[in-house]
Amino acid sequence: AQSVAQPEDQVNVAEGNPLTVKCTYSVSGNPYLFWYVQYPNRGLQFLLKYITGDNLVKGSYGFEAEFNKSQTSFHLKKPSALVSDSALYFCAVRHGNYGGATNKLIFGTGTLLAVQP
Amino acid sequence: EAEVAQSPRYKITEKSQAVAFWCDPISGHATLYWYRQILGQGPELLVQFQDESVVDDSQLPKDRFSAERLKGVDSTLKIQPAELGDSAMYLCASTEGTSSGANVLTFGAGSRLTVL
Image 1 (cartoon, rainbow over the protein chains, first blue to last red):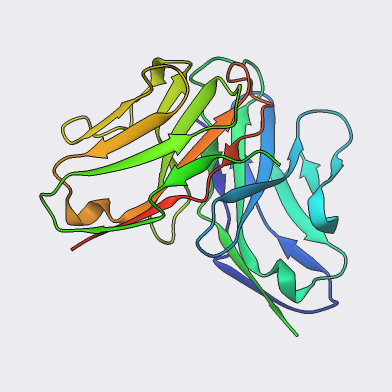
Image 2 (cartoon, rainbow over the protein chains, first blue to last red):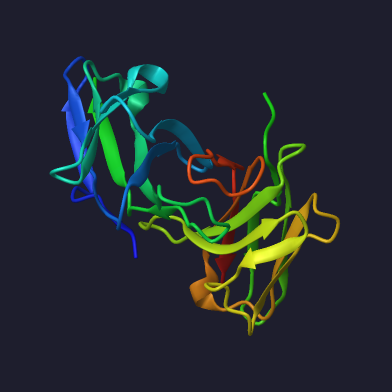
């Protein structure tokens, strides 16, 4: 069964500094990987996904993520953090080998990003 | 921009009472999901519909939870009776077509349930 780990409950970074939110996954076969962001009392918003191809994926709001197959990681990055980036970030994984109806999207426990002014 | 609509946004109830949540997915989205998000955790899938059919309800506590999507459009999730441990955010999401691994889920704002 697939699983996702987000080892940091919280990441603190100063505005203007680069940020990294870590994610590792476990899935048999090829993974489809996603990052979502959740603002307080809101639903999840899609940021970016990796399906195949270039290991560096660019997404919304200046975020990017790097797929590393050997380390089974998909860390979220941004070169310069903004206070408005402060939110809860979720990594998620699915099997990439088939599109069956029961191919669940499995979420990590989330990482709270706090950007200080 | 099209949105997934959910209501109510907030619900406070006493244990043993019945509660219901409603979701209207993006028009044309065939696949609809209900997730439960307990505070401090990631969303967990409760039930998945393909049109009006349930394709996965393996994590739905069927003794107290029920879900329906009668006409393959909007959906209702019901809890009866509610228990203290049901306090959570209930998220609805939808995606077009069948559940391809690459499809992106669009989430509603959620319904926050507090059981006293």
